[in-house]
Image (cartoon, rainbow, N blue to C red; front, side, top):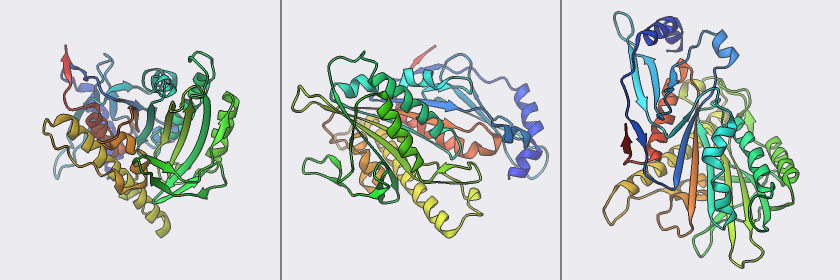
Length: 366
């Protein structure tokens, strides 16, 4: 299939140049505790030199619309263009800086957590779509915001960095020591035995971030020479010393990238097992995302079942998915997109779930 797409890349570009996308009504989603954005990364040099072309195009009118154009393989004749339109929240193109994404999606979580609530940011997408790059920049910006003295009052900040691989959890600031994740008597998720580190300033937090990143589990894939092979999580516990119960939490999560079957051909049995575990946990995450969407759209008294206990990742994210959760939570999601024609299958999945997270009942504005 890849060779077919490369052989027809010129035709793909010619058909796009002739295409006039239909007008799309701007979508303004109703207020929600989940903010969604999509980031389309630039094409990389090795991709363009191998003949790959762009297949994902954000509209220039700030409508939040993305057009994806791939080719449909046919038995006879020339392959026709197959176009799909998505509205995955706010859309950031290849030239938009991380600062713009941070300001609109991540920064609102900081004062929210500062006041004793739970804020969660996670980036997801295909392997090689730019998740770790985005998270690294965002961690730096969060560190600056927490210590620039613009937030009111004094807080004690405690940092923990850990990694989830299958059903195992590893403390990245304690030489990858394993630890269990359990629910306490109140139903809250507890990281049993993980080491927390007091953060006194921006430099401390950035130092912990760098130390943790060195111990992340990575390996080369066909899409990325340094692909994250587990979910990396930064948890910042923000304690108000003037209040006995005032404690906020901010999660920054770099999800492991999903891989298609065609990307696994040269992997060892161990790597294939590892990849299956990643894909299973991401599948459960998608089921939970679908459950949230269904729960918000239904008017029935009985809410849909959300299977957050089926993977370690969604257990940690229980506060996002459990309909009985009583802590105030806000979540921001960044869907990272690889724009190449060769990866439209994975891109469609990413955009589809981003669109689902945005909410089922958008308000329309012309």
